[in-house]
Amino acid sequence: MKIWLKRFAAGVILPGVLLLSACSGGTQNESAATSADGIQERTIKAGIGNSESHPQGQGMVKFKELLEEKSGGKMKVQNFFDATLGDDLKMTEALQGGLQEVTVPSTSPLVGMIKEFGIYDFPFVFNTEKEAYSVLDGAVGQKLLDKLPEHDLVGLGYWENGFRNLTNSKHPVNTAEDFKGLKIRTMQNEVHLEAFSKLGANPSPMAFSEVFTALESGTVDGQENPLATIKTQKYSEVQDYLSLTKHVYTPFVFLVSKKFWDSLSEEEQKIMSEAAQEAGEYQRALNQEENEKALKILEEEGMKINEVSPEEAEKMKEVIQPVTDEFAKKFGSDLVEEMMSEVEKVRGN
Ligand code: TK8
Figure 1 (cartoon, rainbow, N blue to C red):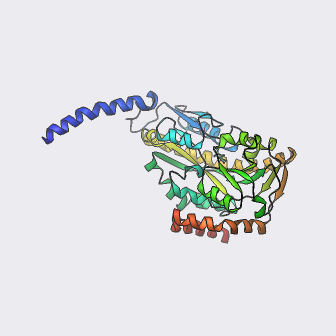
Figure 2 (figure 1 turned 60 degrees about the vertical axis):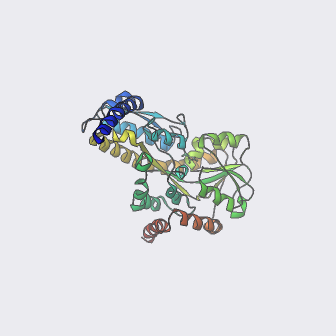
Figure 3 (figure 1 turned 90 degrees about the vertical axis):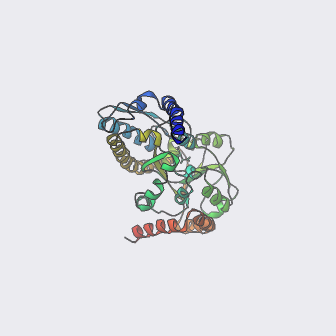
């Protein structure tokens, strides 16, 4: 009986597996799945939400160059910008399904999948990029990357979206009170949603590619993003005020489809990982340069720009604190403490 079952099972399942693998991956990538080492001809479809001229786009161009160079031209990258393959969430799902190989989303919209990514969404945690890097590139960042494989994703490190600033069409935001009544587009993330509600704003979660039209049509009064994004998305055409709130730091996470990753040889995985890391370092440095340049350009384009004093930022933080406390329990107090003590270490130096 046992033997019969085994045979029966093998007879049924084997063709099923073959059928599945023949349909799923694209023949090029599939045919090399069995080779243990060496570099095969591969085509990697990579998509992001920002434009090619954004530091994230330039990071992808660098990734393409590096991987093609390291693989002797065998591993080719096709880059798709401006959410032409879909927004962050949609592309991440395409990776899970094995329909796309690479995307580099903000961590914020992924909280439905990995709730702990929400710790990065706590407002006013990081004061500098260096503080953010120490968390992201350290034990806390790795712990969260380790959660990706159970969701059919592999994380090759963090790139930089950066510190977010508020733009709107109504008035400058200098104090916590100034948020009251503003309709603000947020990312699809519950921490952001509740933090802006707490400040008295009316947050409206929305995918990135819909933001410009929502601002233009007045569906929302404002949005918040790093300066490089405000510039490349031409928000100055539809927003008069830019307030340098720097209220939260958003990382990008470099994701690979686990289905694709598992089909790679060790050597291919190694060079892909190196290319993502090196392009990431380049991207972070470029992002900081571009943010500075963007500020000047946005001013020239006529935006009315105001700084937020440290005292007023502290008051904003106090208003939001109950939201942060509530979510800290949800995401794991130990993890949040570990993040905070890492920040303190860097700040103390
Ligand atoms: C790009 C997004 C974007 C993010 C947002 O895909 O949605 O506002 O800041 O830059 O990840």
